[in-house]
Image (cartoon, rainbow over all chains, first blue to last red; front, top):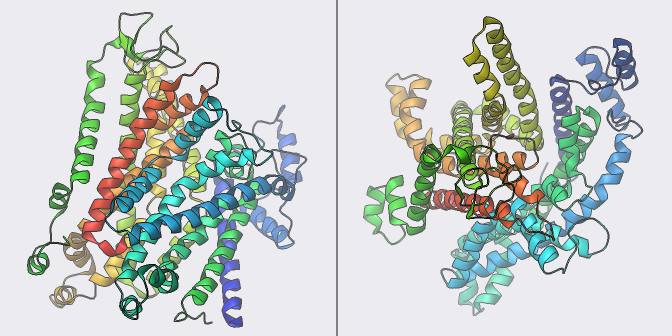
Length: 306
Length: 329
């Protein structure tokens, strides 16, 4: 167990290192730099700015000095928002994304598993067909259609909920529905197919033979195994949802972390971009680790080993 | 397939067309998509020119007649007085075009990568798959945007170069063409960028299939006959992969269309005067307000896009379930 964790830690740091390196090199190789729109952009001003933000010298020098700073846990300054450090930007933008993404994750996983399980148990009945048709519909309709549609109906027409913004619970409802909808559908489809496979297996026939009702057999034996593929999918999903969605933030006028990626690339602002990638990768690594550990809990045949 | 007798099922593997023909939703989807593509590429030619430009009649509701010219705006007009019906059709051209060509590019990359990785096996395979894992770890949007930023300036510089050059040479036509094509260069940029990014899943799936196929006896036999690796890949493995490639092509097209519309919705993709479903939806979402509802600007593109994606997903799902029921997710 310990050696497993140690090994995972090592490979995780490697992945993180490569992802950040790739991101930094790519954004620095892009045409245009962060100080192109500088007023009175004389060569001297450019030079000074580059020196201040440590973007002077060759690409290799910039890269190695950035990596050295990262090793000291310094994520540097934004070149666009001059008085802000990357840590401060993340501190300000992450909470709303974490909250919204967390809620959407809980909705997507619970509702998805529930719907998928019910659909599988009522295979080929109107319930199943309806649920799967709904799921396909939810996957096919992108969030920038559901978002404005939800606003139009529940905010502008019925006046039940606010149009957008951030504050109390009522502000969370529409964005979290909008964000979770396609993922409920993905999870439900995954769960249904997985449970259908398990329902055919021998150990479930045994469970039925010893007198359990179908509901008991499913809840006591089948669910535990059938949920494994869903758990695999949920790891990356959590990382995705928690780092924010640019679309949902734009549509509902929320200041979150999803916009950091797009805005930083637009502004050629290397350090916030790398910071956001670090957060995303770390979340991805952590949740994939949780998934692996959950696997060994859910299925005793699987053991983590180093 | 399930209710077919065992013997005939094992002897005769149905091809894509048979599966689609047997399933009603898949058939309806196919017909819908075919009709949409044909309409999108033909109808604009027959529309009067007055519908193709901006006019003074901004925000006209559906079925209103035009202000500048005696035409009917079937789906209404937008803020520049452009006819929405015409823009929906040209938008379908762009969205579908980007989806199909982008998916085809990603397909070629993914298939080649997956085939080489799976066929070589061992260390090469491990290394190539680690690269895919790593690319999965970096958010996709990052690559797409970086490719767009990189290619966009290149293409615009080229066109600008052609324009300046033809201006000097006095070639009026070419100069105008280069100037006119400027906003449309983004379409090519989007196709290349999305194609270069979407191949990861494809590569994984193809590799998995090749790992199974290369152990089969006919591969050993053809190697014994002295065929080179490349010949085995091309002549024996590729035909066996064609069904799975077709299936994932159908599923990659909606993914690329979604990516394109996502970027255009954020204002990073297709630019005016060119339109795609995403850019039309952006225009529609900007004008929803409680005072005066301009619902048609949101409703028509939303319905058209959702139906198209639904049809593509239906088709892809149907094919996938029939060809390889195990991989359904």
